[in-house]
Amino acid sequence: MHLTELLSRDRILANCTANDWGEALGIGVGLLMTDGYVDGRYLQAIIDNHQKLGPYMVIAPGICLGHARPEDGALKTGASLLTLNPEIAFGNATNDPVWFLLCLAAQDSDGHLQALTELMELLMDEEKMAGIRLADSSESIWGIINQ
Amino acid sequence: MKIMVVCGSGLGSSFMLELNVKKVLKELQITAEVDHCDLSSASGERADLFVATRDIAGQLSGKTVVSLNNMIDLKELKEKLGAALGSVL
Image (cartoon, one colour):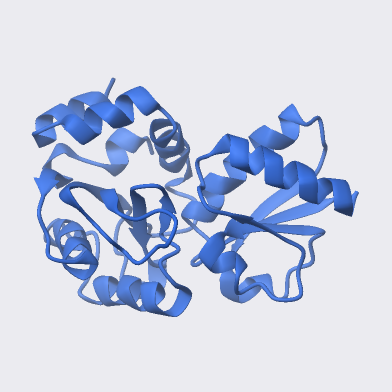
């Protein structure tokens, strides 16, 4: 599975606004729920992880990867992407605030690994990330991911 | 030499970080076995070195841990991993 199969244009939102990190995660996971990728338990599992383990999911400055485990309610493998404007604090001392929020559902432990390899390449591509940050529509973001 | 990369659930960020650990080991010309797991199984894992982001690293007590602030920063990883390997090797 490629990153362009993990994501879909319909599950990308540009310049999303939310009051706090919980609401932002709710929007991202909501997109997955609408498409049947996760059930109602999944958001709570991510929030529980955040509280139990600390905001470790903010993996780099401005970048959050929100996910839980397959048994927490992941029904299919897929992801949603939000750009947050304004940025939102997730409580991570070194990497706040977050502007790039990817919510991932993985049905098993290896079906999504090619897509994650491509995601890592994208996150390290400063030019593409700058483009995504400035993009004002899901179409533009989708276009950059498909380059 | 075995290096274990740890994250909260063991199937997202730990795999992504494992990719970069392998990249840096290649640059440093060090041969090592690299794997990833979640925090709850990490306590039972035997490895010479554990790698994790800061929040997770703080919960790996009694292990030799490389703690990272930024998972996609190859420079930080290379510096910290290089230093830790110097003391483990």
